[in-house]
Length: 191
Image (cartoon, rainbow, N blue to C red; front, side, top):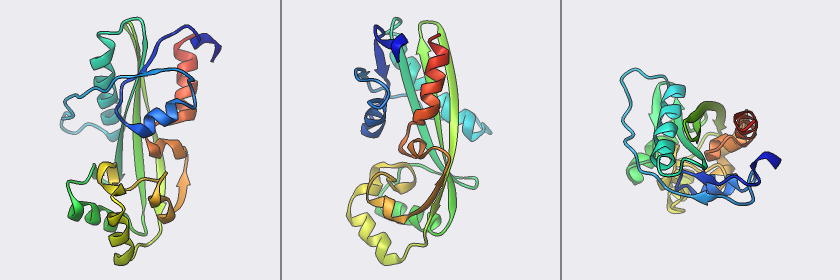
């Protein structure tokens, strides 16, 4: 990205997966985690919800960094109208995995770009199909510890990959950052 060579870039996230994916776009960037209120207005659409949460995360960092390009993101896993956040414990993770078993669900990731007074936000949706899971497979997966810090109780880039039958749209969106669309949006935003 020639236009970004002299620009400070900050990822407003504590996610190691987002950090890894940002490395596909930028050889150098900073990371500043931001904790924000994640309550949402009643009746907000899922796409708008992830955009709003990403914007809040970005604003928490951008206020102190007006000359940097701040990039923030938020991801939700949904099955129909049911939102599957990070599990609260072992039983909750098992419940989520049973819900996802043999079904197609959606992963929404919202992204916000902030630089000075300018902002842009967008979201991407990816369909993910799980193979049917046995109780033995669920117990094994829980024993890996992987499901407990991830929305939907699985990591597509880890042991959870063995349960994924198919992905429609952006694979990286499921990991928490839609790399292709982010690249395109940054190119437009920094013109």
